Length: 186
Length: 144
View 1 (spheres, each protein chain N blue to C red):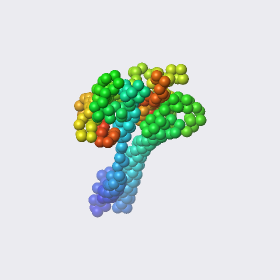
View 2: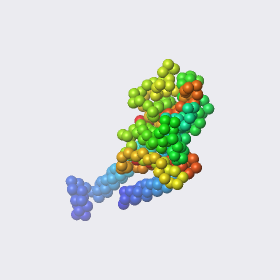
View 3: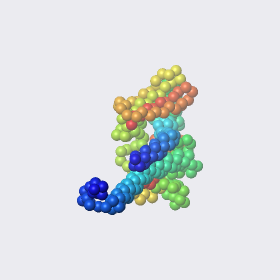
View 4: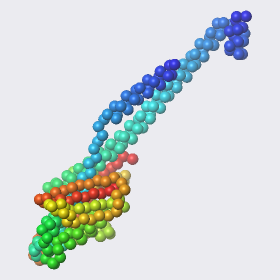
């Protein structure tokens, strides 16, 4: 009678002996524990993946910010370098035209591109500067190694060139933007 | 019971991580674009001739305007300064990328020599101020 009462708890195993019922109970406990361990394991994996995704996104953002900072610093460095500078925030356009295309300088710049674009006074149409049309142009390309997926950082500078007017030589300056191209992480 | 314990443990650990990440000092973003704009625009060669061999740059023109001088073409320095600044601001700041700008040049006595403005600010405002000469100063505000 006692055995029947215990077996009744497990429905179909109504006629089980006491030892069998204990076995069933233990097996169920083991299953429960296994499922629990699996659930906890999956939970930790998902949490880890979630953290990793957020961390990687932050890392990419930081890399892009660092690249932009480097490009901006490069703009400042270029505007104040002895090769191109004609004072604070001033670029000598004549020197930029002559020195810009030399390959020796290309190894120095750890960026994708360096351009100087006149913003005032300037036409809306873009005229690339060459030896034949300089200074009647508005875009000087100092260095270009674009491979796609680049962003730009820019800084205002004054772009000056020598002008001979009525036998007086003076520096004529325009407002320009020094545009640095840099690679970004997608 | 065990599951609840694990959840509590995870919540406590994540709270500790959150507290640590919030404690890290936030990086300051410094916008030097406006300052470099003012500095580079001061070198711009204007149409005001002080003498046949000397063409004023914007900085000289501001000083001339403050002193009430005239250019060789008999126009006042202030009128040429006003024209130049308005035109320069329009062309230098592409209107699509900003909401508004406001540029003011003040004399030593805090009198407004020139002002160029466009639009109404409805976003983040950034600004810069540069001392030109003596007490003359130039201020610019841009709204993005």
